[in-house]
Every structure is written in structure tokens, then in C-alpha cells.
Length: 144
Image 1 (spheres, helix red, strand yellow):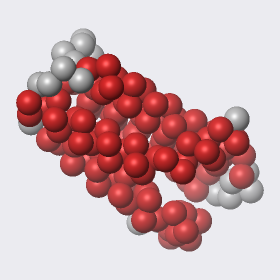
Image 2 (cartoon, helix red, strand yellow; image 1 turned 30 degrees about the vertical axis):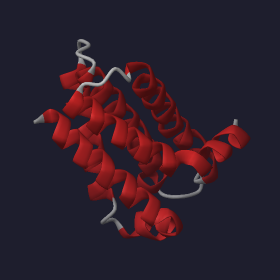
Image 3 (cartoon, one colour; image 1 turned 30 degrees about the horizontal axis):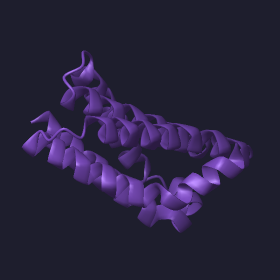
């Protein structure tokens, strides 16, 4: 599973930006690209939900907050992406999923002020910040 997630990590940022563009197109113009939007949302949500499982194994000897940070960020991102998809597709539960995911992502933003988390995740901080910015911006845009 680690090899699969590592290969998916290579395309994660591209997939996130494509997903953001498709989300904006879906919200503004309501084009018939539902299947592409659903596939991108599910794949991105799966990547973000599976990533923490590998990180938790590597962080066994770290403090509890550092060990649980990837789980909070990953699961929160996955729930937010699925909530945005549900909301745009007018499925039930979209609003509550978006709010729960947004809350988890915002709590993970607060975790970045904790020095041990900063020290541990400094090599991937640009990637984390880009993910947080895109998800929060799209989440707020869709919620309004």
C-alpha cells in the first residue's frame, strides 16, 4: 500500500488543481462534467485518507500531537472534498460534511503553530499549505 500511495503522491498537486478547476466550473457554469468531477473527488479523497496511515507508522516514537496531525489533516481534507462534491451534486449531507471537513482542516491549521509539528513536517510544508489554501478557499466559495 505504501508504494501505491507514494505513486499517487506524485500526482497529488496536479489532481488537486484539476479538482479545484472542475469544482469552480461545476459551481459557476453547471456543465455536464459530473462523472469527471465525481472520479476526481473520490480519488483525491482516497489519497488524503490513505496518506496518514503510512505517516502514523513512521511517527511511532513522536509525541501524540505530532503523531495524530497527519490523521486530522488527511481525514479532514477527505471529508471536506466529499462534502463539497455532495453539496455541488445536491446530494443529502453535503452541508454538514462540508462544515465538519472545514472544521477539521481549520483545526489542522492551528496545529501548524505547534513547534514540534513544524519541525517534523518542514520538508513538506509548502505542499501542506497549498493544500490547506485551496481546500479552505474552495470550501468557503461553495458554502456561500
